[in-house]
Amino acid sequence: MAASRKLASFRLPPLPTVSELIKLYNLRAEKQLSQNFLLDLKLTDKIVRQAGNLSDAHVCEVGPGPGGLTRSILNAGARDLLVVEKDTRFIPGLKLLSDAAPGKLRIVHGDILTFRMDRGFPVDIAKPWEEDQPNLHIIGNLPFNVSTPLMIKWLENIANRTGPFAYGRTRLTLTFQKEVAERLTASTGSRQRSRLSVMAQYLCTVHNCFTIPGRAFVPKPEVDVGVVHFTPLVKPQIEQPFKLVEKLVRNVFQFRRKHCHKGVEKLFPEACRVELTQEMMQKADVDPILRPTELTIPHIRALADAYAHLCTHEPSLIKYEFREELRMKNLTKQRRTPMGTFSDM
Ligand code: SAM
Image: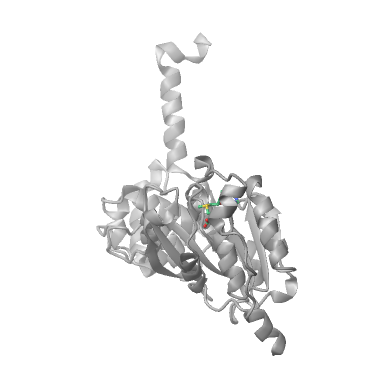
């Protein structure tokens, strides 16, 4: 009890400010790595508060950079903070922070897209999926260029209970470009409803916490930024393999403004397209003239179940990719033109 109070009341000792560190180590922002720094510690404290109570927590921070958010996570009482940073220039500044918080900050120089988070924390912090969430959080002011691929990867990890979710329902508090944050949380019928909305919401409770104006960052990005909190659901709203759901949703949303059966059709080879689309829509009991943005998660679940049923009867269907067929057709067409025939080569 006394120990946990001591942990929760930890404060970093006086340190050079984040701006002073940037000057000291000459840390010019690299556009290539989507570097936009947060120097206002009141703002980084506010982001960290969205994660909930961090006392005694294990935390992974993505892209700590000059360490503003890192300071707020430590001051919130985290017991063990593992930071993954791709740019070596930030390592000396992070070491300074690590010295100021002995035993609390672990620094990994690496790429978050390949980092094995399932090996990053002690196994005994894991909680069974159906119980409370583990005291493990992922927090990050994400680089814009990796935020969407990273989130898709983590959603797949949630579906398969792998990576950071090998420990249970690890919560995430992350920043995104404002438009992406709006898409992640968009409800059925809204203008921003997209593939990302469905993929995130069938697996998680998603909450758009607040917006940070672009001017709060150094250098100022072109866009505003949204802070989003995710808690994986105990029971996903669609119980089919992630890859199947992803394929269905990708096809359905490829014609956003058309009736949803247009996208569903593209799940099937031309020879059986009309017949199987009709069968799938009927089995799912979904109105084929709804727009993709009007589909609820239960609609998508019914479509995914119907598609899975068809794939069980005809296993080759799951491998069929309309875009791949189109690409092959175009390639054949090009090869048939007089300038590009095989015989000319
Ligand atoms: N957290 C700092 C802040 O809020 O001021 C920096 C945020 S900045 C938007 C993104 C950070 O992620 C940079 O430090 C950048 O070097 C780092 N980064 C970019 N790509 C990365 C990757 N693939 N893996 C780990 N870090 C990455």
